Length: 313
View 1 (cartoon, helix red, strand yellow):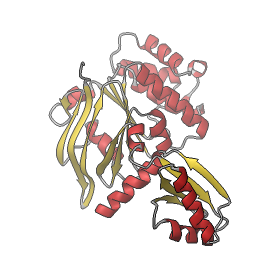
View 2 (tube, one colour):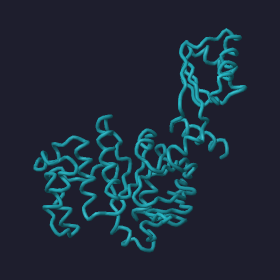
View 3 (tube, one colour):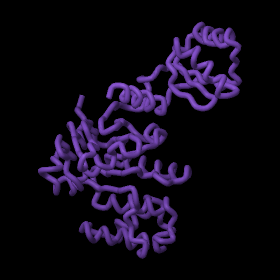
View 4 (cartoon, rainbow, N blue to C red):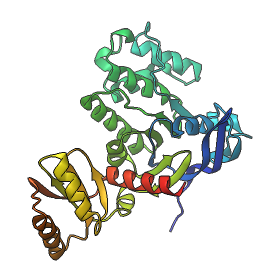
């Protein structure tokens, strides 16, 4: 079987800013043509990782390659094949969408900037607004234009740093469509996100970054196997009842999530086991007001991975 080409690779990256150790040990690889999500909370080191990979800053230690070129020793080679879209749209608000695109086409010495601009306006659904000043655009339109500009010159790898931060649900779904379009054309998409749903929806491969370390990696389905396949959600009348239920059930089951009145516990989906759970609650005069069975999602995975990591620090 033909081996897949690696588009991005890091080994034991480390980076500190003064006394703050942001990246402690970051290693992963990204195959060409895939959507890769670096998932983590705010402050976990996602943007720092992207800045190293795009040659904006240097790592203190470790290795990083993009397209087979070392980001430290061959930065020009790396820059020639990548594009970076940061957290804020880098467009000129005084120009029209067409003018923004043609300007970048001129700067990147494409053979026909006008045709390139027209093709990208069509591809990103901006043709009707092509000659309007960008200051009149919605946030989602500016973001689409920003990504369209980043594709000029046909980069083999595009980096998207939290591409849907601040978007409403409709805008986020539109951006997901755009990202899928990029991947379908063969572009390798490397995105950072703090949204579990986004990683689950888009990514072929996910790496979880927590306190400067990669604590888990794999496809969404592979990561979901890290938590038990049987989850039941029990809703109680009030917090006092919930606390009583936890005291009874945590002796024999793993509590994966809880809030004010809702408890999620892991089971093996065995009917006899479910019966035992309800028997224990009934014997303690506790009755849930709602009950449902769930499949694990990335929320459950993230909570388990990060809680285990906290315990072993």
